[in-house]
Image 1 (tube, rainbow over the protein chains, first blue to last red):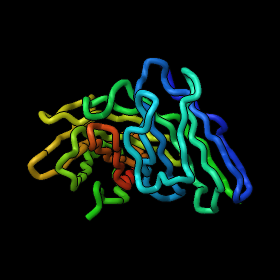
Image 2: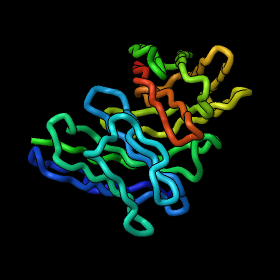
Image 3: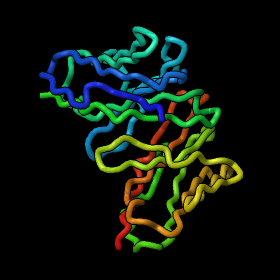
Length: 116
Length: 110
């Protein structure tokens, strides 16, 4: 079964540094998403991406964050000037179509980001 | 009011029991609905989509009431492997924005 893959599985970074989290969505999927989950809290939507542009973003997704699809397979989340409160699990997801057409999202197994 | 609200539980049930979870959503523009399960420190995994007419997948039945903005999940004949957190998920804004409930924890005991 095709799956979403994320790298690295665990990233440890000093506060103030930049990190790039990588995702390879399922190959025939067109819609891509990033979420975060702080330990013990709920999954929070960050951003959706379609046709090489952001479709929707949450209030969490401020200027510190950016997304990119640099080639035909990778989808990246960049976090600049990391803060302690950025420590969380970050999930990438993809779907064939937007959820409005009842297409579910498939999740990668996440990158655990630890800011020291 | 929270956008998607669930009873956090935990629900502690014996094997073989039937258990029901409820979820309410506040945004009337919500378009599609799903139940996911999440095991401890793992990614959310799709359990089932929720259709307007209600739908069933094996031991699992989902219902949607758009008028009351309410979604339910019924699990029959609970198994030990059903122990997990069940997440109610709602898509709005044409599907480009997804809101997760905080989840309901289920423990199934032998």
